[in-house]
Length: 482
Image (tube, rainbow, N blue to C red):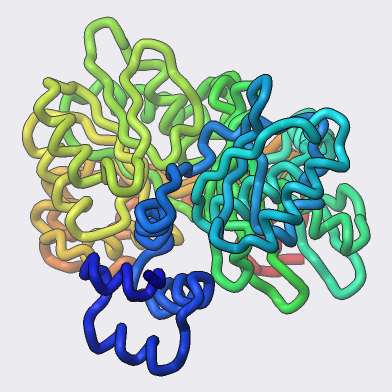
């Protein structure tokens, strides 16, 4: 019985599809499998498990893969077969098409040329093409020595990101240090291809997919690395985010806030309910600032819980939860946390309407909520909440303060310092939000009555005090004041 007929009798395919494939003489197992998976009629795993029944062979996902030192795996790439385990007398082989007798003969011949495997009896299993390819590439291209050296140097230089960018004939690797991309080294394009495969294997990405963006992660020496790939003209651009969860927390007194701002932030950290919002673009230090506030809280008398994507730093004596796709999201996580009797809740980021509404609800019901939004300034954060359909009265009645910030490179020493503004909410500001008063009038009132200093002015003040370079206004705000 052909595999095609077997699929029809098992009702894995319809009679119409069976007739079409039979009439086109697609009778060989290999072609039938490829057509059905390429068209989406059956998944690769479904086809693979049906093959097991058809051939009477066991299935393997090769998860128990143990590289056999004496085997040259490059010889198996063209065979779509992979040796994945051995015993005293046997060697276990995963194959995509175990009915292919010619390939089986070539597998036996390849094993016979090796003194350590020539007397071993092959035992065949059925595996999916993608699993076989992954294990072969892992065995042939899984050398992590280059990756380890690059990552060690990046961590040693306190880089936040590694950028691996291919061009026509070479690849440039850069580190982001203190917010600035700094060239690390140039490698030839062949080494780039080897490096990209090794990184994808390490992060469990699809090594055969280079047309669509992918994201994943891996861990080395208790440091988490988030990897993102993006297709470009000359290959995949790769960015690695370095998340050292065991890094030392920075005291709120050393972030760069003014003494008045620092005292105010320490004061609002004592509040029992309401919402404290930090805003700014990615990489502006929002999470670091929130961590510094949590660190000064009394963790013995307050139940502090977090929802983060990802957890950037581990803090003692609080309960931190990482968002995981398909398992826990911000909305479901907030609902769950509210049943855990929290006093303080950190919501890593408000990204959508539902999360915004849950965050506001938490602040209304006796909890202090710390969170972040992407906005250009403090008043822009109010507009963002309005975009999420949060009513003005809820914003006015529940938000305590909004802090907007950027990170700017220090003038004469390594590291960066916060350039910030803090919008305090008093009754007048609340009434202005209730009444939809324009941003400019709120800003004028805050400057005259609440000590509000804009980020722009804070930047100018730090330039005058020789804390940051003269071009900081240009690089931070795109304004030339020279």
